[in-house]
Image (cartoon, rainbow, N blue to C red; front, side, top):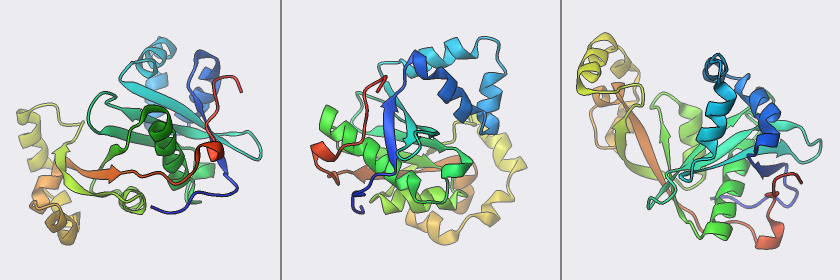
Length: 211
């Protein structure tokens, strides 16, 4: 699972209405985020979604400068396993901050909520995210229908129009998950993580809102 940083490079801060400007900065950094912001009432919708009792959302800040670096969250609160999500700005990518962020998030949820069981859903062509899940101790736990596929009819259509994608899937990866490559045209990979924690409570780098 890796070791906790003795000089943490990031800090997490729970999302609040006061942090909407920073959250908007993160949204502007991705195509999907910009699509969210195109809606006239996007701030209200975001606040409602992030305030759900089934979701815990955090903003990620660089420790040295205090600059916003991204966001992360846990969804499915109340389920046996909570689903992890992360979206870092370009300036924070490919520096190992993804692993440090999710380690800090899981440490926080373990210490404050007693939660040890997590999962990540990853598209089969996202090699960097797959490496991230493995670096956190993630192991194959099956597949689930892609959120882009809303019903069986769309699944069948998508399989036909994107049949070429099966040729791009690593056969070894499909075999590891016990499925045919074509199954991954319409499904994502599930990695389970059983987290034991990597830092003591006094080393935690999660802040209360407003700190």
